[in-house]
Image (cartoon, rainbow, N blue to C red):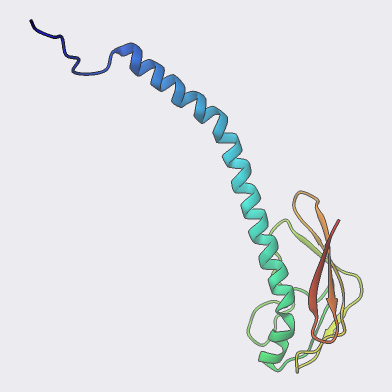
Length: 137
């Protein structure tokens, strides 16, 4: 007796597999897009907070005092870079100008970060070394 051996997939099996792949892609695709957007936002946020936290060290390393305010945040320092590089669509509001001295000390103050999705976060800088504290709201 000879047994009938299958050498491939039937058209019906292939169609079912393709339908399942399409269904999974339709469900996972939008969620993956949202996840990538959230990761990009978090990366930009963390980079901006790190740049704010590093301003004291920059003042010390460059031996240059400066003032961080709404008007001066785009001014260039001795290294040719702006005081604070703000990502596109983000806003940084400084309540009162924050003074940084050439030796890395600062006057302290508060900075408001506004993300593209209108999320607002208050960053507090504690004098004299401007240690960053974040109060999300």
